[in-house]
Image (tube, rainbow over all chains, first blue to last red; front, side, top):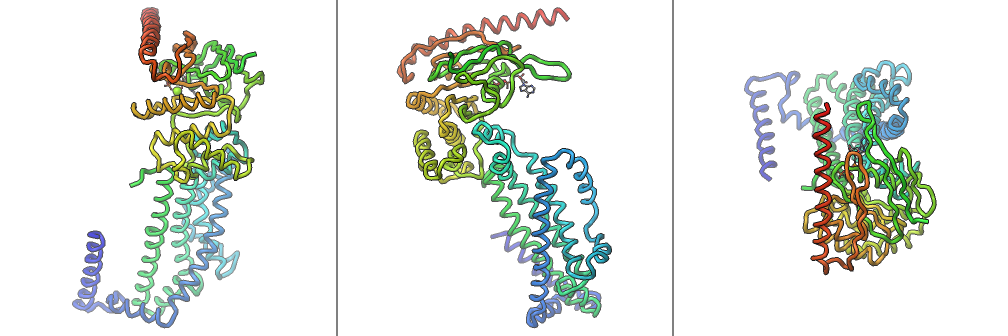
Length: 253
Length: 261
Ligand SMILES: Nc1ncnc2c1ncn2[C@@H]1O[C@H](COP(=O)(O)OP(=O)(O)OP(=O)(O)O)[C@@H](O)[C@H]1O
Ligand SMILES: [Mg+2]
């Protein structure tokens, strides 16, 4: 409870100082709009439905991209974990790709798919699939040998051992992979939309910026931040924590 | 024909380029329905031997037969209980016990699980997940799980080693009752003399460097053993005495070895 109060006080004072500063120094709205203007712009976007239309479009893309990425990540991760040759060759390529932010693929993606949704989805898939792949691979390789031994003495081997023990034992890693895939995908989505086409949050942000509507720009930035934090902290990290406790990787509190 | 034949088992592991012999010419004949303990100091190769019997590890040479058939890989006729319970955390207690019963109709498997959970006095915890159980309870579940597939031999590698003294004593009682009830053949690894005497019909005392059989002791006391504290103490005494002599011998060798270099 104290935490909530502390945070509330902090954010209220932050907005107060911001508002005061803008008014006191008469900062022009194109440089930094006052929080009241930002919230008014947000209110307008909610009232005329643009915000929800944009959110809907963005989330649709994100979900499609994530679904594809998780599937690819799962399959590739299993391949890398099971085949040493694949790990040594394809695995090194994937590690190298990881250090390239997926957004820099956009020019190529636009050439391949055109200036449309597909390019953005491609960027999301690329960013998210790589982290998922790496986590799935690590998870399967790190299955505790005691589980494997125990299962073998109970007659499990081959595909049976894989599906009934190795996969479920790696679930905590899959969850972490999914959380990171979401985080990478969400950033890739915003970058992709900013640089390509709409409708979508990123696109509206660029549109607002073209018209000098910094109140709208900041409003959308706040929405992006709130969604990111909510999904990551409240949804994924909590779920991840529960899974880790259940899998005996962390003591329950 | 012996029920479980362990004859002339040799095993060495490669260590920093040279091989170290861990098991030297181990021969033990296990009778059906016998409770037999492997007793020996840390590092003498008890786990290695048990893993070999389980089929998780291959010996370098020697004969290993259960009921006349060679043991080449793990199988359901040899259940194993490890020092850590090794329960699957994603399954409930009941599902864990049902794990080896794949292929059996679900309803039947549930019945079997229920029966063995009752045997280890954990029926009320069927729906719990392992992380909600204490260490002793987890170990009981893992015993139920191994028994559920009705193995011919139950291999136990210091199953109570990680538990506190009180829980340990209680579970020894539970295990003895289970053994009296099911008449399973049990090979039980321990480095506690008290535990070995408390539970076994026979104690195989092992020495180290290399791991070998020092002595094969029959424990001819009635059951349950609780009523025979004095006689148990006498057995413990004599085994302790024997191990001391062995220790002196090892130290002597150690000294000679040091002088020789
Ligand atoms: N996979 C392995 N590779 C190399 N050396 C091994 C391996 N497994 C066991 N050893 C060695 O074999 C010896 C016997 O090990 P083992 O685990 O069988 O002993 P133990 O009698 O079970 O001891 P403890 O009572 O401590 O469990 C040890 O010296 C150990 O270092
Ligand atoms: Mg051991």
